[in-house]
Image 1 (tube, rainbow, N blue to C red):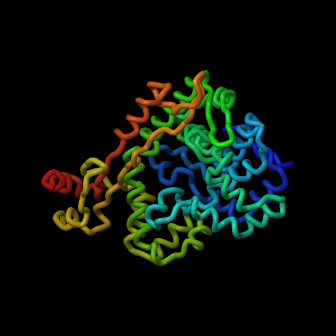
Image 2 (cartoon, rainbow, N blue to C red; image 1 turned 30 degrees about the vertical axis):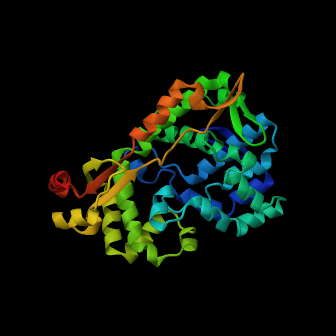
Image 3 (cartoon, rainbow, N blue to C red; image 1 turned 45 degrees about the vertical axis):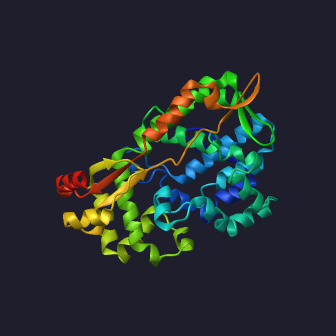
Length: 359
């Protein structure tokens, strides 16, 4: 039994099969992939990686399974590998390449990681289904799950903000599973509301901070400049810095944008508009006399988001918004964060801002 010391959860023990997965090249690559991409440009402590988050998700999945009386090891393994399909810079490159890390997981599990699982007596296809949230896999992937609990705790810890602090013990004391759905007893509603409040605050203060979104727009444009020059399987072998080296060598535009990011010379927000509205960046760039990569848009949209968290009261299971005014308000509040930012070089901000008003 191997023990790893984690700053969020304390000691995390690894079984033999878990250790074999952790020691694989595919898992070790996650040490080179930052959890929050360029968020460290705003919160300097946010240099943690997908590797420790994966360990934390595994640990939380085991705790949740234990509370529910479900076999823990398959869920721990699903939690361990759930992010192994991430590209460099985590979610930031998914839009540029049109593939998400959930799809990539099936690719990775066909290699040495899948072999390690099989050697330990576990079916990689079952682990994949659990990681995707099927059946009891909702412990790994749902609106209150091991993944979410760990990243809120961990991101809060490393950014230094207090919004992601969660009463994990209380939440685990009221969790239930009816064979199809994860649910929570109503007596724990305050802890659930606190988690949702913290999540909304983390979105607003950290994940959707304007400077973070500007950096993300610049990074995505750098990725678009080179996306036809690299295969998905090659990306899945890279860490953040390796991708930057590759992109700089392939495209002068990507090099320019990545150099600006490394120097923290971020584009500025020229204007904001509704996420539902249309904006022709090519037309805006033409009118402003700028290159296409000098007018970038970052959009936050939740696409009809609604809380699907189930709460059990004396009459049965209900959506949390039916029993909590706070949750209902938070559900509505999420949509108020939907907006698009037009990002341009600092020296062009005033000019583009005026053009935005005209258009």
